[in-house]
Image 1 (cartoon, rainbow, N blue to C red):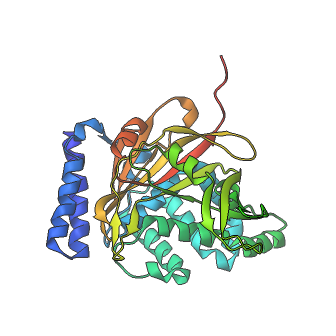
Image 2 (tube, rainbow, N blue to C red; image 1 turned 135 degrees about the vertical axis):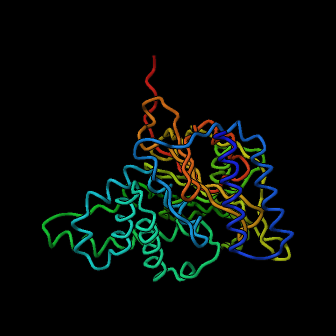
Image 3 (cartoon, rainbow, N blue to C red; image 1 turned 90 degrees about the vertical axis):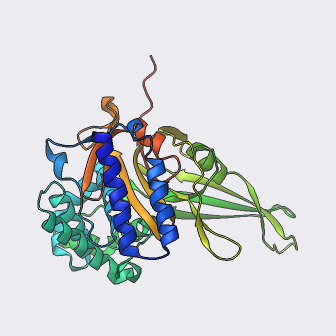
Length: 369
């Protein structure tokens, strides 16, 4: 009965999104059919509704195609260290006029467990309005891209470092940017001319890494290929036209966000979705200059649908009452206002064709026995 309930709720959410979006009816039916086919074997997902404790009210309302925002916010709220960094600096945020976006996020954190749907809707819509001042593409309604939304949120928080640092100093305190502390990592790109061997290096900071999709491949494979040497056209002073580009990670973050490139343009400049299944690694080793690090999957944002402007976003994340170290595999499935309990094993099995944004958490290597 529980599995059937989830089936109906997810399909209902998707149909509601399509009714709001309006468009080609044939494509609409195809999207709904895709969702229904994906959930045909719904018993494998093993979800359970949350009826007790603070998890009962963790969902967010969706009155106007904001599933992309709801899913992104749920994934950010899964990052305990990131959230704690923001909540612990509430006094600094309150006194900095420029920090309105972070104060809005703090309000979302505070009402996350609330049963008051109106209060939660006001909080997320206020967050959206403030974000849209500098990212006007999110000002109006309509389906948006979750990856682009998440990028805008993190970039705007990073840009508040200077005013918040100055505000904290005036209070005799200090400010720690939660994005820089938990999500920022550095990549070094080395370009070597094949003609003369001259090298040039450039270091860049990122908050997430975009990976080319490998049909049937694993996330570990995609990350490995991203760092492999590759040829590119570049005219050197020696007259050579070809260089070798090598990318490597220098410093690794606590939370590693990976964006899978499921949308691409065809030769006719039509954007299509790649629905090839992949292997979602629950754990993987990430190689960097500072040494190998072990990472475990803690959150997945999925796009259910056949195109970037059609479909529905959902999120899955590690249960807030548990950690990676306690050995439990309890996860939550967030579908706007609906929240169900599931497991990481089921999420990694179910999300192979629609996983879009993955978040991994760095952890200690297991002790040798």
